[in-house]
Image (cartoon, rainbow, N blue to C red; front, side, top):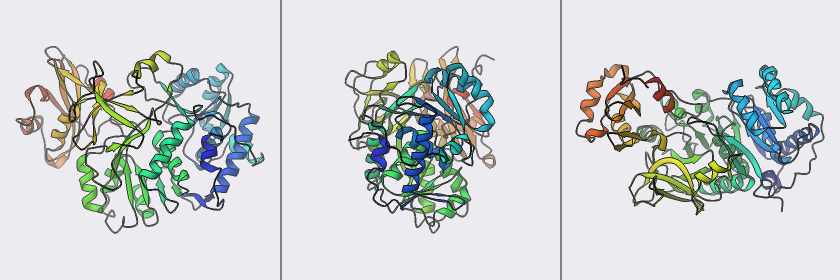
Amino acid sequence: MNANLFSRLFDDVRDLSRLAIETADGGRISYGDLIERSGRTANYLISRGVKPGDRVAVQVEKSVQALVLYLATVRSGAVFLPLNTAYTLNEIAYFVGDAEPSLIVCDPAKVDGITTLADGIGAKVDTLDPAGHGSIADGAAGRQPEFATVARAGDDLAAILYTSGTTGRSKGAMLSHDNLVSNSQTLVNFWRFTDKDVLIHALPIYHTHGLFVASNVTLFARASMIFLSKFDPNQVIDLMTRATVMMGVPTFYTRLLQSPRLTRDATKNMRLFISGSAPLLADTHREWSAKTGHAVLERYGMTETNMNTSNPYDGDRVPGAVGLPLPGVSVRVTDPENGTELARDTIGMIEVRGPNVFKGYWRMPEKTKSEFRDDGFFITGDLGKIDDKGYVHILGRGKDLVISGGFNVYPKEVESEIDAVPGVIESAVIGVAHADFGEGVTAVVVADKAAALSEDTIIHALDGRLAKFKMPKRVIFVDDLPRNTMGKVQKNVLRDTYANLYTK
């Protein structure tokens, strides 16, 4: 049997006329259309010299043709390498030099700079604009739709996704066909997807969430998706009357909650709201439930592993928790120093093992070796705990741990207390160099202007709720916290911004 992800997605499609994708302008693409369009594009890729195992780097805006390009790349046996559209040419230069793709697909507006980079490694360049037009679309249009899907083993690479690189050199996570298939099929079952589902797809597709979770899960279920170029709250609320599922980042939910149009009646056709890619505040979870009658299902995944845990479809979806290990996935919490497994409700390093876990980092064998235990568990870098009911709680990244006066301070614990203060919208706690304590616990807070909060009122509210060594040395108020494109708070940016706070 061909283990190629494309084969496992499409070989047994019985009804080729079945709707796969609907676009905002009313376009309708069937499963048969996807197969044909991917065949034409795969034939074009081969004509451009793309061979099995070659990397195809893609930095383009979201479009149906961009999704077809992903499917065609995998179908041709090549390795799909999506790149964040926000990356600068300087950042792209690193990825191109490291991955050495044979073909780079970019927006026409960036073609001059990308061509210079491509020339340096002997790669070819094609273009694709936000409307799905460009040289790759034109080239594919003239090709035959028939294409024999290239045979791949389950362990062969299907994609490389680069980590955000906030703590040094960005690493390419190597994901196999089996990694992507196993995780998608598990989620179809766990989240009860059927061919009756209609997904509101408002996520970018250069990221695990929008590409591998939202798209693959929908296609494996023979469901359909309403494919939006970007997230617009009013548009999403309009679509809820005929959709059944939405996947989003926490920002989607906080923005939707600001709309007076979000009501129980507006969401009555929906069966499932899923959140991931960044922590959903427990208050947001509760407010969403109160306003819509739906409990958001939060889950936990990574670039290197796809999804690891999920709150249950049936059963308690615990605010602030990312749920239980998915079937076939093992999760444990260990002492970061020696790897000893810790007792329930003890904070430590989260480690995971399962068919979803990546093969390693591209061209980084030593780094790969250092991130895996001898028994196959991957050290995620996330701090957390498993409670007495087996639910996993994420308390921050290992690099975000604050060591103040020799004591470990877990930012999430302090943030939870600050967020509970009336008038606080959200907070981020970081460690900043401090002459006396090594690191000073520092809180950066976004507050409701009408609340008139001050540093003293926050400190007073925390008094008696936190041990003295956990108390913030300073509280700084800002209008917004810096976030990446998936909504994660960029604590590295905050640490850089306030690096000299205690030296002035």
